[in-house]
Length: 353
Image 1: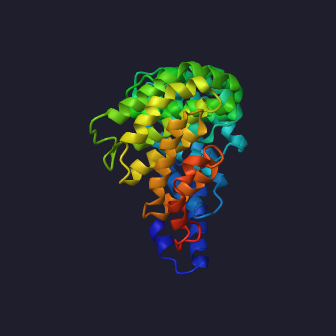
Image 2: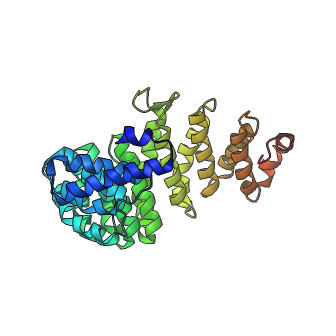
């Protein structure tokens, strides 16, 4: 089918091929051809990505998900995420199958169910399946915990009232060593802060220490090939933690005081000759300017922006100027020291700068 579609020279030829294939798939669905069900679903997904209607195949997704084998479930869940969205009434029919798969003994099938739930979960499904996701966040398997934490981000987003169910679990996941679990836990904490003021207060009391420890460990860690990006240890985790720190420290002097030392360490030790290092420094500066930081720390942040302005990369100059526009209302004296460098940027031919 794919070869036939790619060989088409006109849109009319393509439509004719798609029409013929859709008719064959409809006939197979009517005839209940189970052997070719997963193959037909793969064809439907390709047709859907070309922009043609495939609503007639939605029930086939549910049948594949209800099958016993992993290959059928994988195609079924992929079709579910691609062909349906949370507004479809058909989606409610899959809740029972999802619940069964979340309790399955095979961790890969559990992973499929969590992935699907995290992508298309509706408010009703969130309420029904939240207890299963909470249980899986206590799993011994790191990948299952990671996926359950990401799934709970979607649940909290859809039903903010469920935030209190995940607060304690989110804090406990910050003690894990697996970086994938840590990033997921930090993302969940970030979503909890947005969803509930109670959660924000709880996390200020209970997770600042854990975040400082994570940032210190990842900053001081030796070379690890699975996390290394251009000589920087896991910049993605760095950035997620810094963003969460900014949310927790905003308007809270005690939290901000607790962060000052580690932020100074990150700002001074991170190399700025690679994009990964510059991304961390940018986020660190944003965090320093967003919390109740000491004046010395703010001066350090503005000096980093001064270095950014001397960078050859115009993107780095642009983001530095953006932050300096906000920083001038906080510490005009420190910004004045970089007036010459700022004026040099006027000569740059790039319009946004």
